[in-house]
Image 1 (cartoon, rainbow, N blue to C red):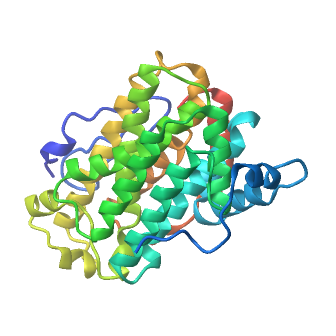
Image 2: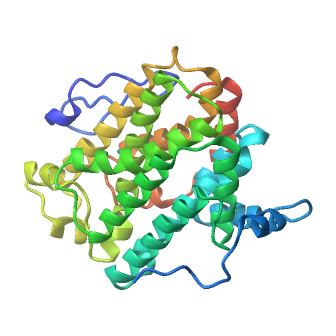
Image 3: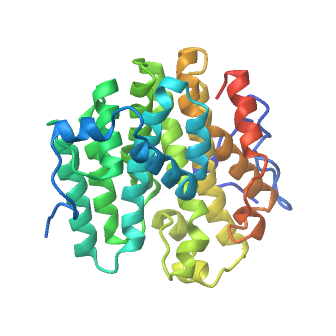
Length: 334
């Protein structure tokens, strides 16, 4: 089967990643109304008191939120240097809070109100007056500790807010833009937490963030389908003559798999580009990129099931992920 233009020119990824090249017909070969939330207003003095010695409620809240809602990020954060861990938990918990909004509201207006709360919260954090909310308090500590760039935090909120529209991505570039403004922004902030200011690290973070966004879109397709929604790029679907109804019906024909192959190809290419900076990226930045382990794992699995996006094995947890992350961390690679 001829590969489409999106996936042309693949070569095997380095660092013991199986080849994702596709060869000819037959089975595919190894190759993604504004209000403050309820609660008393908080001044800087009260926040300092709340976060003083012996008080660990807010950081424990962030850790548990991440463990329950974003287990992969939780594991990756555990492998960061000890002095960076609590800030990373706060940053990722902030992302979880935003990500949960879309699925937890029945009306867009309510979602917009919650996004506005977080916009106002970020503004107040940079004025040393965070609201009395655990994630906000921990994020305030992280901002003070590492002088985090406000622009990246606001980009994440703005992009999540646009995404409340519940529309499919018009093309793969639109999906990549969303990933750049959310996942890549998180990585830029993680690099700041690690004290890294390096252009090559930023380039790697941009590509890894885009790969993360694409893979997340693929992984969520069965869940979205169960809610009668499809967000896969429309241009690639149209190129292969596939409709949204094909995904809602869990069609597994060749054209549907070609759509998934093309989208997965783009994630593969971003990982490849990120690794092209490997020798130039400071070793201290590598812990920020541990999520490449789970990205590779998913891309390998989806290739093994012939790009059947609905295959049950893709919904199973990788019980060896903690070990794989530890080994990657020990090897000092990404």
